[in-house]
Length: 315
Length: 279
Image (cartoon, rainbow over all chains, first blue to last red; front, side):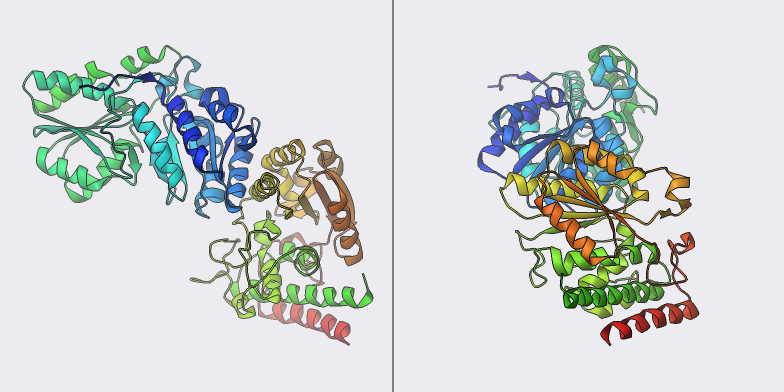
């Protein structure tokens, strides 16, 4: 029987997971920069007010405070919008958290074009690239409610700096909580196939899944891989796909520079060079509009993904 | 403070200054000017003020120190060596490939360093985080951080000051080494950072202004900091390059090492002062 679909933004799943972990781990503290209602750390703040630190609209200081808390033995989670967490506070993350390898989790909400109406200033399409470039930083981009809950819990169990990307838009779950297993650094093959491989991350996984399911009905053999851990990336699953299918398409709600596409190409170019077609944001800023419309316009939903797969299959 | 105590601190501070000159000379680089202006406060903190155990650098209940102006680590390293955290000979390898003592403090590799620092403005935020952790855990350890006056041009310093005031981190003491000079000139010409006392006060701090080379005044300031129910800022007037006459008040000695001749001259002056003190 198929698991029941839950329609929820991953930021909310993240907030719930923080509370569940905090029950048994008194060292977990959560920091926010006046966006707790939006990042959903408000769920934690309500339940554990004594362990919630609102830092005000001062992201650079928030990351530094988180570093100090970690140096004194706490397990801080610092949340803001992806743009401000990874952009404004980049150097604090680099020098005060990552260089000393402090146990700080950074959560960036409202990532990608699906931030919607707020427009370009708030639609962060560079966070994965920025965080991936920092030595030792782990980068997670979970796709649905169940995956976000497990990924958040895994991040809190892991000792060291982690960046978790959260979405604003409510998305349908596609994983089954009964069978879902989150394995650190491991991609998940959602469909075996031999003609081509689609590798997707975040909310694009569900869109890619819809596209692939249609193509399967039409008789094509398409492999689909969900990459929730962008760094360290699952080299094995990529090399295997490159060798067995000979052609890859990546799908991400991020600039095609520096994100999933590049992470995949870094593996294939040295291990098994194959053509890689990149679906993502083509080095441009977004603009205001409803999230779903923008995702369509930017070609990140099932119809365009299907079209691109077909184009590649015919090559 | 007794005369003997004061003399002992003065001797240690002179040795710390020598360590800073030895370190930067051997590294052929580094920052002697600010290391010398802050040498007395480092000495006071580690030999008089802080509750620490050099044989157990990661003791959970220890007082913490963050050198927010991380480039002035040469004299801090010398103080840590004098305190017994590591061997004095490490100073000769400062900034060398594979050395324990990095160009800026590295908490992972150097015993006694509580926080990695070097990018200005960041250390004070980390110190706030440590002070907050103590409050959350109902522990009574204290947290100290030294900033440069030029460093106070960084916006993050004031984000942190607002945070410390708002959360009333009364266990936090911020020390500003007001030597009046930064790379491109005087702090007055370059950034216009003064007045610092009213700035910190408006963010919820108690403050005191002292001569940062006078151990009696340092003792008075730290005792006021302990008594205060607010976060506390010690604004200490210092001389950049203090103790080496040809470096004193010279902006050119912010970030360069002595050559062989200058090294001899600097060490001869410091050794002479040490002989006078030790009688």
